[in-house]
Length: 497
Ligand code: NAD
Image (cartoon, rainbow, N blue to C red; front, top):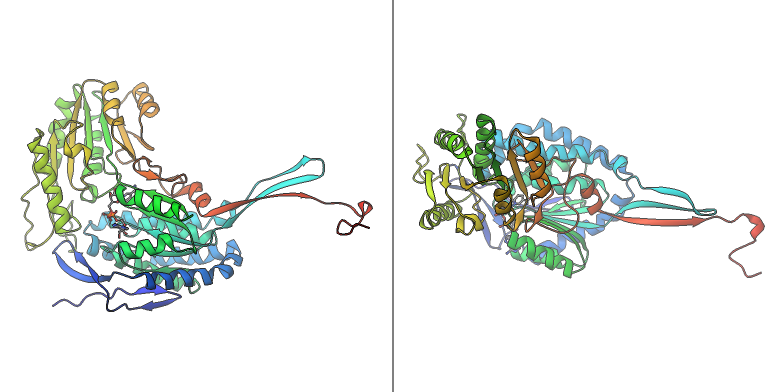
């Protein structure tokens, strides 16, 4: 039997093994082996973590921003030094290729780099003489204990969207990573510890609903950041705000890549294929639907089918890397296969069928090959539900206007791209499309650390997004001071005499 990796919680600077609770299995999806068991923490464990964070807050708040930034600089250097080890950990518990894991970690490190600029990011505004002799200024102060609850698909990047900036702003933090991929979060936390984060400033608990509910209702938690599926995002937002907390909750998505008849075939094919099948489609920015306009169908569809056929699926936990790895669990792989079945049953045509793919030496891995469904309509199950797997839907449209209307019927609003040579068509698309992140000849227009990760519609619940200046605003509260100073001639203001 394989030795399981330990999965302790991190509270008040101590790594603590939890016994006598239910556990959730962590797999190596490439071969299907169980590699760890994440403890399903109870409210008692969560309360201990929140209390540790609350106790650490006053000193951390008083720590000058530049000193907090120095710890983050050391953290960034340690992430670079241990880059490949973390990348292997991501691939082992998630299944994405090493190249994709490098991207996952690199995007996360960029958030640490962004957060190192906190002394500049925290500066306020001021104006003299709002009335004669009266000045006004704003400062930004931390909130207190903040919480992050994260999904399985970006084990490094998504937690790093949240806590570097929260900590830089002077908050303390409790992270609950996905119970499917807890190992990367812990490996990275050990580096933060090594960088000198004081005990209690950053804590980790594991678990599911019970742990999350304890975080959402704890009176000392001030803000909740969540990334995951829409039903849970809605629940998190509603529950957290009902309990008086600030909340930002990113949800599911359906993203569209619109290909105009004048688009460059090679570039648009590459953009759509990488967008749809990168990370085996387990991305909230996956371009899961190609909307092909008019004559583009004739040129682009054969190219898409050829490219999908050439995607080599295989083990990612070995030196020879495939183009695409497995899905996160056997259960999820089966759900995606059932959705393909439903699509075919409702009238979609298969251009490339990834079901039944076999990987040598890994009969128990969670594999599914690249699949393309053509002639998909808005009302089909595959259009309505987020598939979150290596499936590209193709919708055919007569013109740009009809294509924009079809896309705008989606309740989600993360990303939408257009491939065209026409500036006029691109402008029309950018102006009318209902999505928060728009790509022009870019397949996955995911915004980077310096800009908000800008979901709309059912892809986001809240007011302030993660990343960029909105991230700083989310993790701080503003104080406005209006001041007037009297001179001695006006007497002692503290006395009636
Ligand atoms: P998920 O919603 O199942 O889980 C996310 C987190 O919520 C996990 O930490 C999990 O433990 C917790 N959770 C699950 N069920 C819960 C419940 N009933 N009550 C309280 N907490 C619960 O999501 P996932 O499967 O881990 O991740 C995939 C989803 O995340 C996809 O829908 C994807 O689109 C979305 N996602 C969105 C973004 C974005 O920025 N919009 C980014 C990455 C992933």
